[in-house]
Image 1 (cartoon, each protein chain N blue to C red):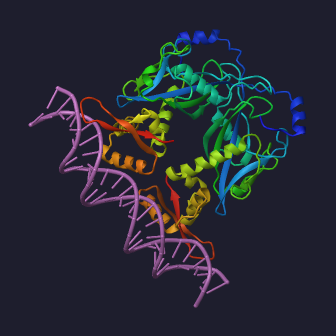
Image 2 (image 1 turned 180 degrees about the vertical axis):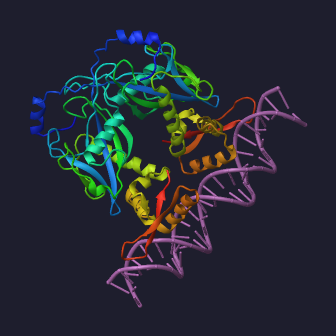
Image 3 (image 1 turned 90 degrees about the horizontal axis):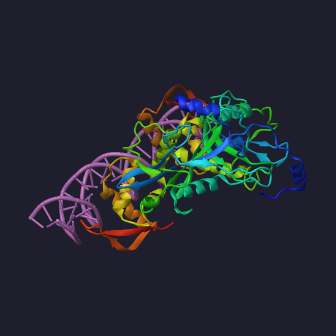
Length: 243
Length: 243
DNA sequence: CCAAAAGTGTTAACAGTACACCCATGG
DNA sequence: CCATGGGTGTACTGTTAACACTTTTGG
């Protein structure tokens, strides 16, 4: 909390919170990875009403406190907490960014719920470690391309997924998030697979290599020791992203 | 509200909302215009505690209902309502888009308040019509460049302004929002001024004209009737954006 | 005639696209 | 030997950046 002048302190001591109605507050997470050159998203099957049995994004309530002093948990902290709970991965091992806040009346039939949606990226070497958390009996990876067409998700989660994919695609072209979807040391081929999987279209890897060389020349990427050996073809150089 | 199967209806009838603490919910608006080739933002001076006397973004509480049926006002509707109230302009006359949701504990010293921030664009021909609304005794335009450096805004509003400007700049380069900051019919010079004001740097108008010609060739922009006469130099062709 | 903004044209550097080609490994 | 993916190079094309020049108004 910020430093306040004396008259503000006096005001606060006398302050009584108004009687406005308040919404419940949740976070929902669109968690992506790329496995086998295919974009995947982590979904759970709901075990309780409403939308029992339907697929849904992992998420949960934000711990909100009462009163001036005890205001509870930051929304961002809640998102990190849920991400760790749902994936079983340690906090800070994944990229996480706010996406959009969904607040239409009636989006949850139980009561007024406002949900802050986030999207997260899990490196493919961590993705197989993802296990079901406490409140997610059956979290697993679904192919965005193959498993999600025409499937009804719970609440307005399909809208969230579509928006997340849109954001993921445009961010890929202007920022460095592609490096969040490969292992810490990676080959040009692996990085290229991420572009093809996320954008959903093929591109010439030889031209991709030229652009990659520019990143190296600009110092954004450097050689990592060793080579990657997949057994059936020429070993590939290994690279590392410098933040 | 969506159609629900019978077992979901039965569940809802029996449903009792939990006893989670809930946050107050507000919307805050970063409202921009470009006047005299200068980016301006609409701010109010707070008349009440906390941060009494400080400059702040216009905003207000979202009308949230109680119960299943009466869930109140959409967040987006609240943003549109506040935008109309604060500017005095009719709804739908300005561009409005969600920016980011601020939900740190302690960001409002009174209580837990989560604020959904939006940014809005007002055409320069409408900007002079903006008058103080009911709850905004003194809303007026401030130059982002000249009036805001080193000035402390209320709450975390400075963070909101910085993020809004950042978003405005990157959107300018990839979308068509520039057309929201000129009159419905405009000259190339006026559009160029918007780019220079928002990006905060000069660019060659002759090269800008070439890019503009491509937009015309692509059918995004068409000639509007007449010429613009500013009195002291050659009259300029007038153009119109086709949505 | 001069100042000021509108509008056109030229050039060189650079980035994107579509290719052909060689290299290192396993079978 | 072939298949597979790794890695280099070249030719063409379109976009961007820097700058010279003409046009139409007011003073």
